[in-house]
Length: 424
Image (cartoon, rainbow, N blue to C red; front, side):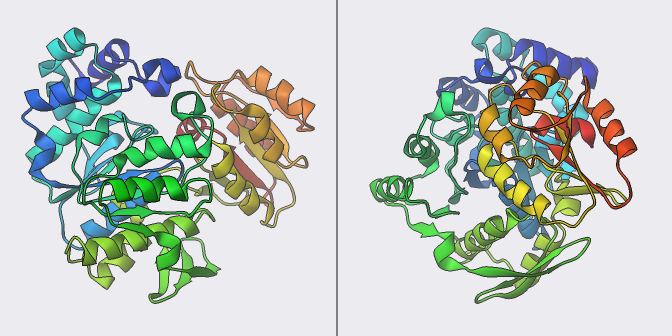
């Protein structure tokens, strides 16, 4: 099979959450444990750091990988979803997994795919573990796919775990309260393994503390370890002043990255002092200043051009978009244009209620089955005072926004990871 045929086979034979949503979600670890036994437990060949949470786990995962990489370690990075190419999910020192490895792994696994009715995520998780073993990585940063307790990645025994924050997303699978969602996410807390919590939240603190106590796991709240303030921002970096650390330049520039930066630095401190990993201050500065170039991270407050300024961000739930809207409305511009598409499993009203009514909207849909039809999104937006036109594709909407905007305007593209993927 060619690379394209291999991916097509995967998409047809293994249900992909990215395409069909909750029908693809297979809770439970039976399949992945059987696969793990078959492949002789590849994840035990290297040390892992597990990263979960609702928002920010991609940024935190990539940043930790960039810092460890900057210190000279060979680092695996497993994240999801991909934006442009499947191979983005599995990287070693920023380099994507080879197409030939993907072809061979899928070809050799066809019997298991079809006999065990594997999900897409189960298979790709095992592919990542096997690849990292073959590549002889020192460390692998493993991002949780969905939830935590029953996620395929949760067969690992990490040296440390991180939970960034808890907010409402995938409620039909994880629960309808923050406490219920936190309980699922807390499933990655392991026996005698330090856990770093990115944000203290009244509804979830007790969940994490109780689980950590049950597992005899040292627990650290990032907000108790570091405080930071933003000093300035340029076209490439945001400069922060951080208590007990000094100043640091971060390539990830969205306002939400302030919380992520505290989480990252807290995780690094735990890795240094509890896990005895040598990480120099120089590596920390270099890694955070060069995250996107070192790891290939895309779609986090990504400035695609200037005059007009066009920004894309993968924030796709109420908590994430609150930060985006704060940052957008604080910018200086003549007019604001928003290219917007949502997945059909999101709380549309809550998200639309966050958005500024003075913007011009370009309602659209990504080319996936889960996309909310642009016409439905336009109708729902109109009810809430959001005015704009409807476009059948992201590229049509993007072109229309560029045509309408002048040099002093801002164009924002978002609402869905898949909209951003097509835009960039």
